[in-house]
Image (cartoon, rainbow, N blue to C red; front, side, top):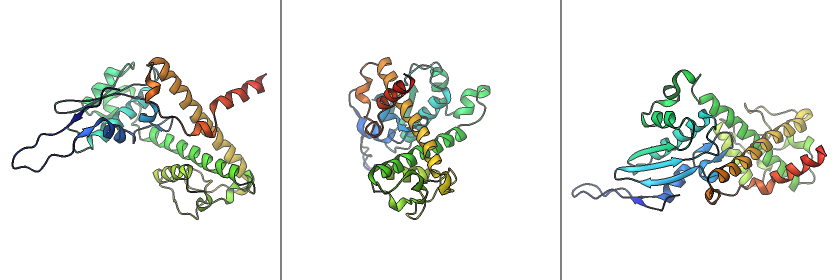
Length: 272
């Protein structure tokens, strides 16, 4: 990450006082809202923000990814979202967001500069816009958050078994980070967040019957483990590709919840 600097608009006599200056920290906090759709984590936590630089008329941010061949649609989605959240800052001025070291960097950066959108950027290579892609991963993120909250409850409450989770409602969950994450993801999908609503629901908010609740929870667990495993792997790839980038990564809370290393050891034992 580049040294911290700030862009402060100059005061003009007779005009309203300028807005507060941006700092690297405030830029990063704005970028917290940009989520890697596949890994369900902010790009700031993943270490994908390579540099923040303040220019004479605004702001320039460079992003990096674990490999040069990360899916172009994911790469564009994150870079575009980053430009959107920074442009929304009143004090940002002219915003430039660029993706470094990707095989489609020139195409993506050109499209971002021209505000061409995904279809305008990739033209004949783009089959559709990114709305459905985003929605698909929002559904997966909800499934993983639902599993985390229910599994944590099962660990804390010996009186509840997997087959009982169909009757668990949002009000039964402790007010912790897992519940907060679940409520955010339900709200994103337009699902109700009332305390009396069941926790174990499908993407449309329909509850699972008691007879299939345990199976639904186990399927949700496989989705969550896949997301956690991919995130763990991508963090390692980024640190290998950009030595020192691990210092920009925020430790995953879920690694204490279900360490990927434990999963790997269990898999090796089962294979042996």
